[in-house]
Length: 152
Image 1 (cartoon, rainbow, N blue to C red):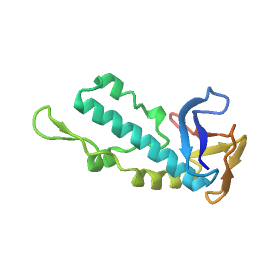
Image 2: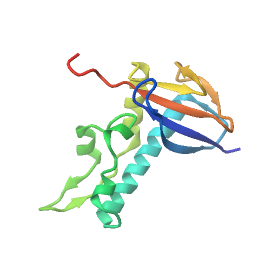
Image 3: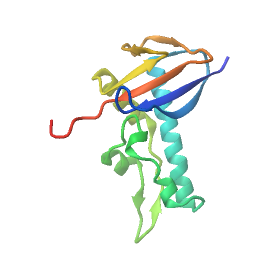
């Protein structure tokens, strides 16, 4: 049976949560590791679709650039973009090389292990990537990303 899980992002405790995805899962039970993987794959799919639409001219550049830093669980760095993102071919010409999710999944799993972000599932913090989570009708997960302090 498929389950739907609301995915939220939060920048700091007490800040407004923002709905990022309504993620459809193949089963009601999923490990934290697989949930992170699903989240990253959804982020990448949205980004790649927006980039394709921008390059095809079906959406405006400003709408495609809606993909701000605050909407990624982990950022595809400039190295990742150079390897898998857009590359210029001639003056003003771009060709799409979609971002791949696997490198970002690895970065996200490492960030989770180093407390780069917290995962709150149905009101409790998840600390083990192998923990099995049971998704209910009203389940939600919040990814609480820690923002480094400036100058510290």
